[in-house]
Image 1 (spheres, protein in one colour):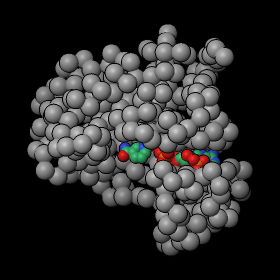
Image 2 (tube, rainbow, N blue to C red):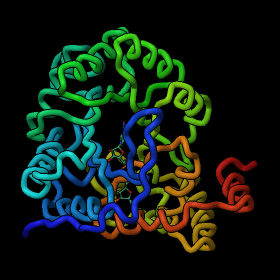
Image 3 (tube, rainbow, N blue to C red):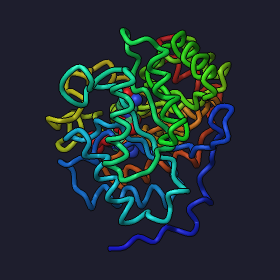
Length: 331
Ligand SMILES: NC(=O)c1ccc[n+]([C@@H]2O[C@H](COP(=O)([O-])OP(=O)(O)OC[C@H]3O[C@@H](n4cnc5c(N)ncnc54)[C@H](OP(=O)(O)O)[C@@H]3O)[C@@H](O)[C@H]2O)c1
């Protein structure tokens, strides 16, 4: 099978400016954390990437450890890039990260210069790329000086191995400091990647304000709470779902009755809006203009199609917002 990209690929997607940078990202981006590893079905994820690009999704998010096995998502992505996207590199924003455990010993984890720069070289090799568009520090390291971690990101840019840098899961105060340190090295922090969904709103407590102040974009990850904010778990744990898989990061005990009960109530509001719960959960994040793009994961083309339909209705009226707030907070 060969892939010919749709000529209409830029007609339907809206692109939002990433903070105060020159880059615009699609309102929906695709993450390769699950479903693109060596345990997954090649032709399935290959078609997901085709469908994504045809729909105007230009941004694909990876990390060194995505799989399983760790590294295999980057390898698979590299194979598909070569087979299907070889003339399209300049239309793509590809990100990778380092920060979680990747190889044994003291140099394969967290935030040292040694780890970050070695990991970036490995990622480039696995994806068969000369550079990534965004290189992230995947998480804060409590023991490495922030100057060293940010220095490694800046060095990646100065070496031409990354065009931009980002940080993930950094709290508000460290985010501000990280942006200052990078600026001293003539590098702007392009973007922050925090966990953010209707069921996890920690970013509203200061981080979003810092992102606005510092001119950083925001790309929420796990916007569907790994599937809990869809109709998937409303009647139990279905076979083949992330929670049912031994290698899935969503554990059965994470699908609590409290979260499912909220999802059921939210699902009723979504139905009145003629949306799926997944669509409403994505739209709810995009109502904040400081959110540049919502980073979804999918295990099938159908799920991606469902999520893309979000873009047909991003508006909420006050009554809907009040009802949602009551479900989420009881207030
Ligand atoms: N920076 C970080 O530390 C970090 C951490 C986690 C993730 N991320 C990034 O964020 C991306 C997204 O995270 P995520 O995969 O947890 O996102 P998510 O969108 O919250 O969850 C994705 C899962 O939800 C289910 N799903 C998606 N659309 C659906 C639909 N329309 N109907 C029914 N079920 C649907 C699928 O589950 P099934 O597989 O069960 O079908 C899918 O695998 C990752 O790929 C990665 O790039 C970053």
